[in-house]
Image 1 (tube, chains in turn blue, cyan, green, purple):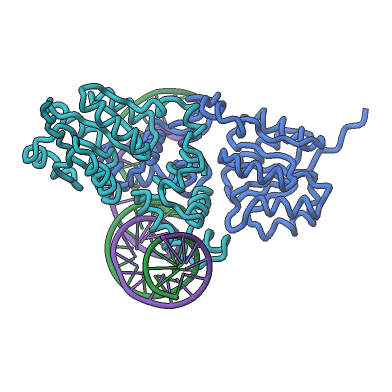
Image 2 (cartoon, rainbow over the protein chains, first blue to last red):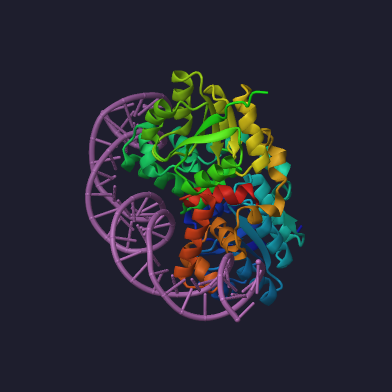
Length: 214
Length: 214
DNA sequence: TAAAAAATACCCTTTTCGCGGTATGGCGTT
DNA sequence: AACGCCATACCGCGAAAAGGGTATTTTTTA
């Protein structure tokens, strides 16, 4: 039987860490190839022309631009391209926006690899997929991943502890005082946390913490 | 019949706005008098000595100190004083801490006046009260106040709009770009939001936004 | 229509964050 | 013994947020 040609995927995300992780995951899939990586909104359209992807994996929080609007543009101008939004955040509002914008899917970044791949294939197959856990407030509260998230994201004990304190609204100085560390150490932990989660703002961190009930 | 002597309440909160609002509410209650207001943790113990309150209304997020620890100290050293924690935030962890610390009650600041007064009287009567809506994740999601919160807190349309954008993780500059305002205007709105909510950090604002599903 | 509220915008200062480094001691594994 | 991981700590820089004002225009409402 004829081997099916692999689908070409274009990754659009200014979080290099996540982008690279995703790429290495996809490299293990014979039917999926990464035809390009874009880190800036301005390069998206040119790269689509250049690589003719079957699918675009698009982060909602692209720096400077609105990921949803960008997705809408892609859907409007390149009807053959499937658009799957990826996000760190569980924001039903954004999900609704994505759905109304005619995008093909919306998925949380910390979905398991299996879920991620299944969703990619589902959307590639012409279906749409909008993470149902995003719309159900109860399933939110009872995060099925439970305490597992720290392991999955390689967060250390100290890092989780500091996330909790940041969530409580403490400043670096207050955190340092509370757990008897140098403020510089707290800053280092924070940098590592940001790196591991692929975020760069307190606001992102708070939302992450709340989603995981830290 | 003998008129009962009014109970003396001591307010401890560095959020002047809330403190004053609470004071004016209490001024209408003949059986409750405010015997003092404290805005700094260091003044708490001296003021208790000075005013011998029946009850202390204590904000969890006192600047510099931990409200729970302070409450524990009061409960430990002044057994006759009832301690009711007040908070902006719905954090089950803090509630548990408060309960374990032997405090007498824990209530959300945006409870209605009626609830607030009822709780104060309940706790004064020797009972404990821990806001049950805080422990129930489902009742959290379905905020009974609904869209009403903006009116209750006197938030304007523009302010709510900006809270939503801050929650999305946008910076002042990005917000200004998105809704076509000067960055200075955004800063002004933010200042007003902080003032109205009695908060002073993004982290607090995010938590507020999430609790009210903005 | 006059007063109040909301929205707009600018100034200045201080503090906190975010991001780029570097470095060292402890602890467990190979 | 060597390596990696974790936790600790410091420096410097630039961006952003916080906090303090003041001021003007538009809109709403009493």
